[in-house]
Amino acid sequence: MIAVSDTSPLTNLAAIHQFDLLRQLYGEVFIPPAVWAELNAPGGVWPGRDEVADASWIRQQGATNQALVMALRQDLDYGEAEAIALALELKAELVLMDEQKGRRSAQRLGLNTVGVVGILLEGKARGFIDTLKPHLIALRQTAGFFLSDRLYQVALQLASESD
Image 1: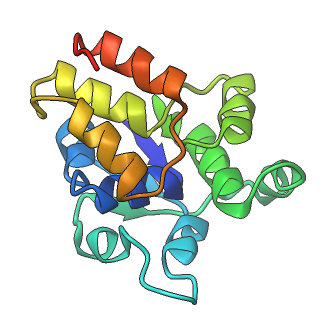
Image 2: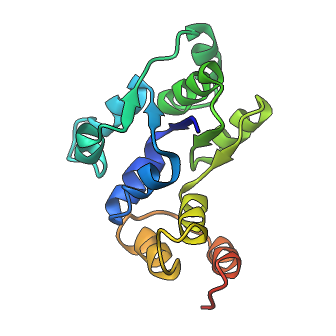
């Protein structure tokens, strides 16, 4: 399976110590240079930076269609735009992205998307994690990830867990 990731799934899974779930689920994950640049942005050490640097299964590759990247940049940040363009070029089965605007743009272009909650749900369904709830709580409390109460409840229901 070819999966291309934006920054958010990498940083949030690293923050809750579930980074390796990406390897377990997808084997290899592609990131564009803009995502690497976001992980290395000045102002601090971002979760996921060291994990990405050390992961032999993360492959950095640039999108060649810069006209598409620039068109997408009108509405999206650079990482999202490059991830979508790269996913199209690689004919990726999946784009890992949390931002709603980016997901809608990817879906309009025929790409399948999943965010960090969906990744955790798939991890539970495939037996890589035992319970979802502690990871959802960690997303909120440790990673500072915005997770609406509605999505929190739906995710627990899908995981056959109760609150």
